[in-house]
Image (cartoon, rainbow, N blue to C red; front, side, top):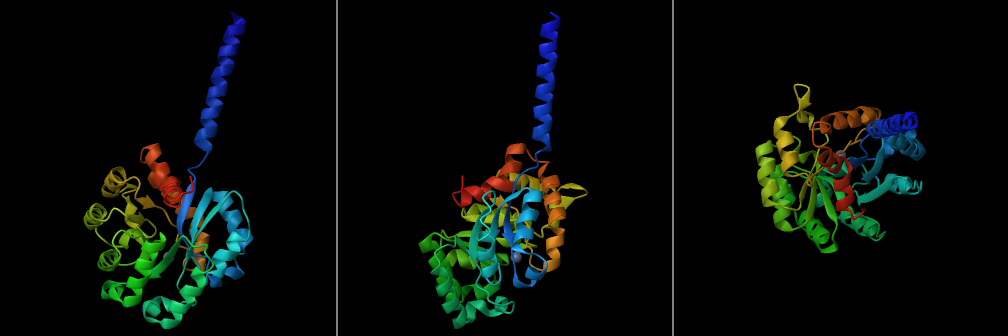
Amino acid sequence: MKMRLQNFLLTCSLVMMSALALAAEPLPIFDAHMHYNIEARNTWSPQRVIALWRKLGIRAVLATSRPNDGTLDLIAQNAPDIKIVPFLRPYRVQPDRHDWFANSEIERFVENELQRGIYRGIGEFHIFGKDADAPYMAKIARLAKARDLWLHAHSDEDAIERILHQAPGVKLIWAHTGMSTSLDKVEAMFVQYPNLVGELSFRSDLEQNGSLNPQWKRLFLRYPGRFVLGTDTWVTSRWDDVPQLIGFYRRMLSELPADIAERIAYKNGLTMFGLQ
Ligand SMILES: [Zn+2]
């Protein structure tokens, strides 16, 4: 009898220990909006970047760097525990962001980069309003559709709709989900464009009065497969904020059912790129 009680207690403590171990395991993260730009290189070596990701539980990233060498150097680290999804950034230098869609040098640059055959998408690029009807933007969108590449656009809703009309069915990650686009409009666009995925960096409105904004929560519950997270390390100082940004996401996602939190944090990214 005494033996049975001991066994029972032992089993109980083992169950509790494994429950605690599970609780201590932080939600894995797919960072779907990061840049390893040239300015960051002095302070952030590729090794330091990988070490940061390991420490924070970032297990996969969508890498889009200016120039693309940053992404290539991260891949060259051969970190077996971190998946790197390379995107072709159409910028050689910072000012390219303003006129890349109307610059024949960029066209040649993109053509050459594509020959590497490693990229899963094109972006992040910036384009707004009517500029999205520029012939080169249309060409890139159609090329992406034809080659099954994703686009990663930092755009207002007007430009997103123009791109999606230029190449119906193209798969598009909407950086910052429009930054300031109303959530009613976001939802209307999700209904209209099934290949549109919202990325959540710089959406400080995710939090409202210390909790997950109920309007965002409703969107996440309705479209659990349509959102991804991002840190958007667009300036070097932003790298220092990455731990805090990941902490913020984990805190917001903790208010969702665990399976939905896991999808938005990590699994959606894997599914989008056929990594699971
Ligand atoms: Zn960005």
